[in-house]
Structure formats: C-alpha cells, structure tokens
Length: 109
Image (cartoon, rainbow, N blue to C red; front, side, top):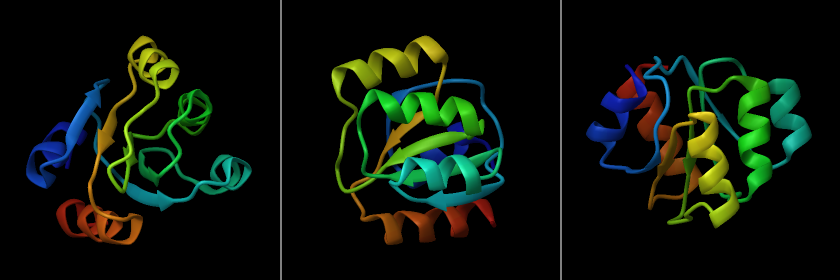
C-alpha cells in the first residue's frame, strides 16, 4: 500500500507529502542511533519525536514515511525541513503500539 493510500485509510493527518511510495515494513523507536542502524528502507517509522533531527534520520534511512504518534505534531523547524526534503509526515492520535498495529493491518507487513 502506498503512503497516500495508507494515510487516507488510516485517517491520519498529513503534515507533509513526498514521493508516493509503498510501505514495506514498520519500525518503532525514538533512539536515533537504533533507527539509523536497524530500520529498513521503505519502512513507516513510528515515533513521538517531533524535532528537525527526525527529518535528517528519515533521509538517512530512506523511510517511506514518518508517523508521529500520540497526537504529536512536528515543530516548526521539522515541518519546514520535511517539506523541503519531500518527506511524508503523518500524524496519529493512537499510541505507537496501536498505530503499529494499524500499519501491519492495512499494509500487510
């Protein structure tokens, strides 16, 4: 399933858009060095971190999208950088566990 299809079906807020890629897996985490070393390309990265460092790490890991959980919104610097880099940033009201279940259910990963 592509990021745009997922965002629509999940009912998530779209903070910024990028290339409409397929979501191939999911990765939950807030510890940036773990994400860099363990997340896979084309993953949906689920986090509660909302600063500009998230955009840098998302670019390094080449994730399909970032899902900010628990009602978190990107801060101003992160939002601007995500738009500049063409990153998908979605917002979920659910906690990370519930949002991860939704990624698995809708994307079949």
